[in-house]
Every structure is written in C-alpha cells, then in structure tokens.
Image 1: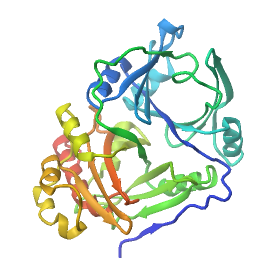
Image 2: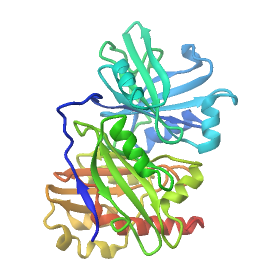
Image 3: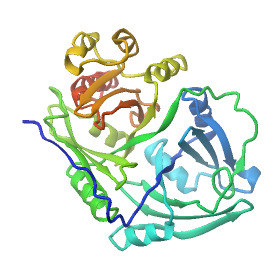
Image 4: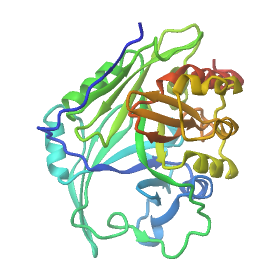
Length: 375
C-alpha cells in the first residue's frame, strides 16, 4: 500500500518564526536578458536595480515583482567572481531562498547553534529609507537561506537598490500571487538528511510524505518529503531519486545542475485558466498529458467549477483530497539545461500536491527526457 502521511505543525514554540518568502535570488549568466524573459513571458514588473550606475562595481541585480512574488536576478561583471563560478558550475539557478523574519540575528543564532553552517553573520545595511538586517546559512548544494529583517525599512527593496520609476512597458502580468512551495532535489540517500536538517535546525515539521510507490512509472521513481514551518507559510518538498529501470528526472537534474539545488518553484494564482492562457500566449511551453486523462477526470475528482474542455485544451491537471481540490500545470525547463521549471497552481481547499496526477505527470516528463536522450 502506498504511504502518505500528514501532520499539522505545532506552533506553540517556534524558535524560528517566518513571515513568508522575502525573495528568491537567481545567479544568471546575463541578468538583463533573464529579466526581460521574466517580464515579457511571466508578467513580472521591474521595480528596482543595482549595478555600476548605483555604485556597485562587481555585479548587476534586477528586482522583479508580481503581487507577493519577488525575484532577484544577479549577474557578475567579471569572470573571477563567485556568481561567475556558480553559473559555470550550475548554469542559471537559484542561489538564495530568502526568508522574511522579524529578527535576523535571532534566526542566525538559533539555527547556527543547532548545526547550520554560517554563510553571513548578522549585518546591518542602511540608506535614506532606513535599515535592513541580513544573515545567511547554507542548505543543500550551493543554495543558502538568507534571513531578511526589514521592519525598519521603507525602500523599494534593500539598501543600495534604486527604484525603477514609471510603468514597465515590457511586463504583461498574468495573475501570479505568491510562492506556494519550492522543491529541492538532493542526491541518493540524502532526503532524510535534509529532512532532519529542517526539523532540527529550523524547527520545521513533516507536512506530507510520498514514497516510490506514490511517485513512479514503469521506468523511474523518486521519493519526496514535504517540510513546513510552524505557520505553514513556507513549504519545501525535498526529493531524492529511487531505484528504477532508467534514469529518473531527479538524476537528470543532478547530472546537469552538478549537484543538489532548487528543481521547481510553484506559483499560485486565483484563476489558473486565465493565467495559463496568458502564459501560452506569451510563449511558455508546458508539459502535456494524453487527452485520455480528461475522459475520466470528473469520475476521479468529482464536481469542479472549471469546464473540462478548457482544462483539456490548456493541459491543466486536477486532484482532490479530503479538504477540496487543486489545479496545477508544469512548464518545461525554462533553460537549456534541463533543470529549473515552474508549477502554476490554484488551490480550492486542497492542501495536497497532486498525488493523483503523479503518474501522468512523470510519464510526461519522461517523454521529454527521452527526446533529450537522457532517459
């Protein structure tokens, strides 16, 4: 029998209270071009910038925003720079999952005393808009968590960034609201190591657990545990490969990313049909499942508000749990390396992650792997 467990976190004692995701920073080969892609294709608005024009000589960074989602795209201006090293190793990828906290010093102290490896001690940054305190710890691979304390800051983003005035004529918003969850891929036998890290070091609880019976096809499999902080605003599924006849999507990711990292970011919307329609119009490519998936959709999930013919046309998947249902769709990798991709998700009561869609979804991923010669 497939194993899936769920627990609701206890919030009475939370030594690491987190308000939400502050931003996600990508290290990029060319942040200006990447920013144009996220503005024109995903509908983000350019709101702030730092670089040579603001007195920063070694890098350029672009801040993009859509509702509560903030992306920070950073590129190095010289080859002998840590950002250049990161891009050479991994390609464009997520470096920093920054978390919004009320006390960055306490967050650093509580996590490092529990075993986190320090990356940046609590540091105060100031400008005319106030002050921000930041600290950082290492997580899997070359990824970090930065704790951002901004309660005494009124600027557009962080000290040193200049606001970009006026309307963004490139941006075409698509209705993305917030980050629902972010998925990390780790190596063989490492899932439980990082589950323990999030439990012991950051005070997270296991939210759900999927084993290789839940997430498998005829060829490949993976295992996943979803970790959540006390208020459940932050959810981090952690995946590792499982034995199969051929190479799994997790193995493919690890090969091309050259190690553990963020596999995909799930972004929520209030109207997935409208959002995905716009993304299609903007040129985003999505994974598709066979049309037969929709022949039995209502018998599997029951009554839903959305017309099945529209879901079928767009390739949107549906799954139901005891609390409601959810709709989801996954992009193809957004870079030449088959690493990072995005999920668009709309929840109508459901707190799950689409368990009923796993087989159809992973078969679609395997078809793409086969085309790349990596299955």
